[in-house]
Length: 255
Image 1 (spheres, rainbow, N blue to C red):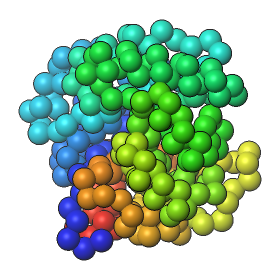
Image 2: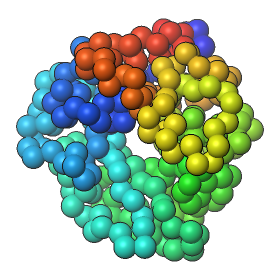
Image 3: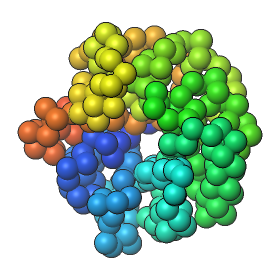
């Protein structure tokens, strides 16, 4: 990994317990290049223009906004798309909770067109409990709909994927960006996968996932977003938490 200075973002999931303004200041002080923000649900931001100006003043790029969920009774995506565009984000993150592939493809295609018309990229994340859950299926869906793929390395490993599948995503040209954390190598039970992802992630390099091998396969210009949702880290004040995530990620990336 030596010699690769990758763009490093601070993911929304690493600080869901704090308002956007606190996240922005902590990320900037830690040395991140940009951030992701969650604007859905209880994480909505009242003054989007002020948040955008704060990010600009701190020298931070607002890389992505999350999360839009495709469900059997989905919310109107236009308000979230408009918020993402107004705040200056580059991309919108989407997941599908449907079990109907054709319906997922149809919804994603429409959503991608709406995002493009607002200057946004659309990135689909695959997980063990979403559709698609398999990275090769995700490539097929991305090709049909024009969206990008977000590769969360924890989810990638937990669905049984590895270097070959990551190579296929890179070769497809559909890779948007990568989310980084660590975890024990031992696979949790199916019932515990969601809990691990939302509460039990580890700092990069502090677990046993084959992160170095996976990161080595990525093109130099692919951005890395550090997402460590951890109940243990909730006790760490925001500035120190951001610094810990930044420094462990940079150490793993080789500077």
